[in-house]
Length: 98
Image (cartoon, rainbow, N blue to C red; front, side, top):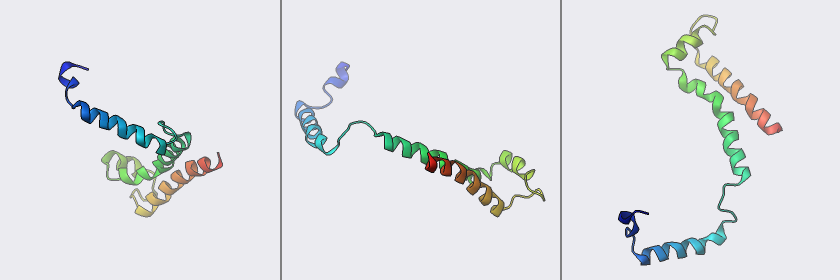
């Protein structure tokens, strides 16, 4: 610590912070994130990826790319939702099976 930060808090405040940390430590079995929590975080991020298609629809580049995928070259909300759900269901199903 530099000299400027060394005296930022009084010794009483530091002692109280350490004491509170030690008192509450028994409430948490681990100081690290569990493997289950990591798995759930990654699963949610991967499974939710398909729904970002809807969020990117107003993007002009996205519109130009998407228009070629529809028969009448217009973007329908129903079509976007259908494909977003499909691309979300595939990784979600894979994660449930693993």
